[in-house]
Image (cartoon, rainbow, N blue to C red; front, side, top):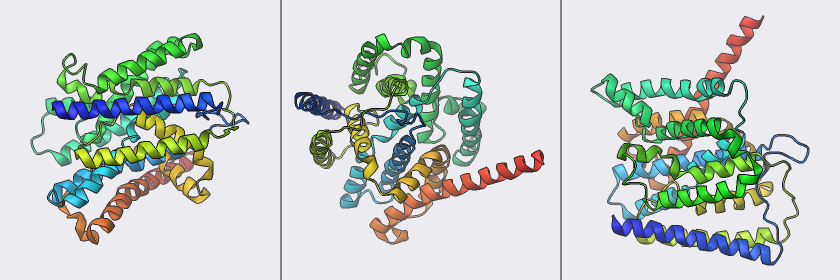
Length: 364
């Protein structure tokens, strides 16, 4: 445990150093970093956040595929090392989801109605179904505990985590959107997040709360809120900042690959610097992505809730099928990834189509 904690600390420290070098380089050479903005210059909604969510959703599936392959072939070190690498590369996913969820938060009439309808209700239904399918001895107390902590399926922890942030925003809205406090609040949230990553709060907080602790992701939430309150779109005069970002991100990516293979350990979902590197890097190059690919990723991002809630069912049932039966390890990985994204989208399409037809009949 001590060695793992040291590895996480070293990785976090490396990220902070490289982030500082990026900031210094861009300021020294007067190259503006293009930060995300929730608005286009024509004041329309910035849809590129949907592309980020699409990438994040694919990343979450990749994290869980590693466990699936490890379940069947723990002795196949070459394959497991590489599925672990892909899992670690995808560790930007949950922070990006937290950040993008915060960007469009607004305290207005119907604030909780929309959260209950579009998040709590689907989560409740899928939790009941998942608990009934996955577990044999059913008790109301156990279900309630699993439901509150998001433990019916491992990825479900994200929902109670997100609901806590929605509550924080609702209560502290006037403070969080106050521009004069922005820098201080962001700095405090960054320090808290770093301390949480290093396990400082583990002995203070109840052990069952660790997985849904808001301290693990508070920096990403605060950053998302502040991005969401930008009054104008960021300048597109990137100068040489894209090249600077490309160089540093390439270095960071190379070190992450070496780190993952050297230590054979899962990185945490909530390291602070890697997701921020990913966010700024991808944002600066989103315009260069093929339009067809952008549309696919944007669609996946729009259907992310369905994928998030349904894919654990798919990967659960797939644990009765060796992934190598899909054509070996490499093709098996691709097929597994596609199935866990496409099947939930297909189900979402059927549900949405059914709801549309139902509403159309009642309106006519």
